[in-house]
Length: 70
Image (cartoon, rainbow, N blue to C red; front, side, top):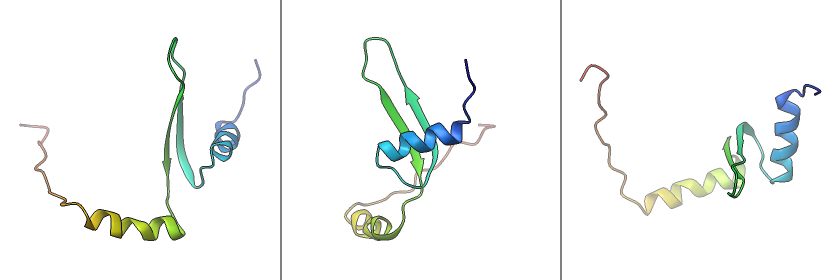
């Protein structure tokens, strides 16, 4: 089996899915289930400018986090 640099194949798959600026791509293929893709990407331009208007419609509440020693 030939080795493939993950950057190349991940880039091709991200492009096929219409994703840009992807830093992480996880594909999951399970028996008798639909294939899924999880992507971490950096929004930019017009997409990034839409975020403040969306988040203003919600009340964001800070929740305390548990410390490891607790």
